[in-house]
Length: 362
Image (cartoon, rainbow, N blue to C red):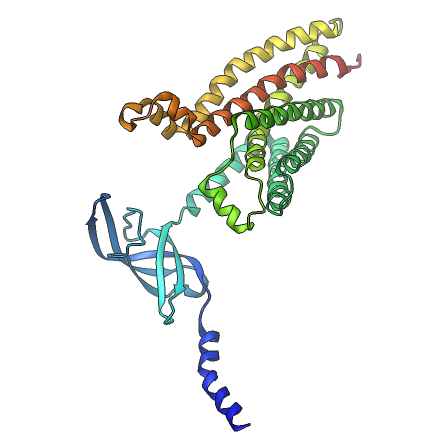
């Protein structure tokens, strides 16, 4: 009994240390002083490193002054240079000896994002009024479906394509009925969207198989570790293509169905075939402008890839070698599949609306 009591006395400091040790934490802090700044030059290049005095703005370190020792810290890979007054994201942890370790990760960019979001919301409401507010609520609901249904199901090992198609249909049906109301126009738009989405899903599935894309990337490998390998990367790629196509599909199809509706209201004597032909001409104009829109949108997002194309002489790779890199090929195929799906949606929506949207005489 005495031996057991003696062992418990020896273990008490260990238990108290475990209880006092703080868990890892990330929080926002403000730079109140740049203590020292130094430029480190090695074989890779030059890196600016700093020792900073910070004041915590939230969490358990709120209003506390802390010091970040960034000079000669080889874990610092970025060359960010902070100045007094900057808000930064800080991670906190403890080493094996219980010493506190603070690490500045990056700038805190929440303020400009929040203000830009507020300006966006006010702009939509000011211009769109009640319909604009409904579109914002539909957008929020779509975000919830993606976060609470699509992503958890994919991470749990469900088929990403089936989950994405199901989630996309839920998003589209809710968004259209919520913004357009429950009427014939909304029914036609939903039917057109579902048909177009299925065509896009089949096309993306076929092209991904033919091109033998794996969907592998650094982010995907990290997700594989989190999900313990229970993740279909190729299916995840297909899911991304479908979700990326949703917004433009919604815009194009609603526009085409509205065009058909207005043509029928303007001249009830026109046959369905004539309505289809005239609305398709509007759709062709929509396609030509949409191609430029899609190209510039993807070009802006993939500017480094375009630079790699133009500087093949410096990289030592031919145009064919650059294009056949899986990462670049994936981006090209993602762009083309989404664009084809959008282009096909125009005759689909026009046909369905022309033959099934009925307008009553006043």
